Amino acid sequence: MASADGPGTGGRTDGRRGTSPAVYRRRRLAVGVLALLVIAALVVGAVLLGGLLGRSAEAGPAAPTTAPAAEPGPDPSTAPPTTAAPTTPAPTPVPSTAPPSTAAPTASSAATAQPSSTPGDTCGPSAVTLRAETDRESYAPGETPVLYLLVSNESDTPCTVNVGTSQMEFVLTLDDERVFSSTDCQDGSQDLEMTIEPGGEERATFEWARNRTVPGCEAVGEEAAEGTYSLVTRLGARSSDPVTFTLS
Image 1 (cartoon, helix red, strand yellow):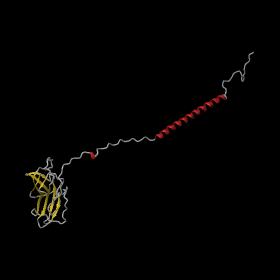
Image 2: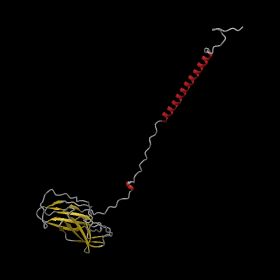
Image 3: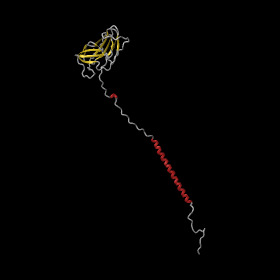
């Protein structure tokens, strides 16, 4: 005889059953393992990052780039000297009341005499006389002639005369041929007014290097030849009588 199951009887098993404690334990274990892996990864990353930073700090800043050193220029002491055009030293005015000395004085490039402290009037040509002299009458080979220009006051009053190198000239001729002039290659000139007392005298000295010159100071190859030379001195418009000497 068939019987019908009524509601509430146990003939069918319900599919919705509660989660067992074992499942919960497995889930908690999985979550714990995952958390440990994450923590381990963070620790490893921190250690690696710290090591990189430490090595960077030990390396220090990059060394500065060294600029190339400038190449030294030529040493001025080893550079070839510049060849300057030869110049003629200027005559040296020297106050004098005695005859010229036989010693060869040193010529300078400018007048060294000092003007007199007593002012005087400028005298006419007849009051002031000019003479030319040499320290010897003849010169052996290699000897340097010393030439003199002498200015004398023949008047009874003081005379002011420009005895600067701008007015002086020593001229040498050989057989009427112009051989040398102190103004051809003179390196600068100046005025020098001096007061010459009555009967007084001023002397200018010039050492001639036995060289030849031409106007404009062009180069002249040969030295002065042997022979009898004539010396004339000039001071402005005044000229001396010629004197002679011999080169051998």
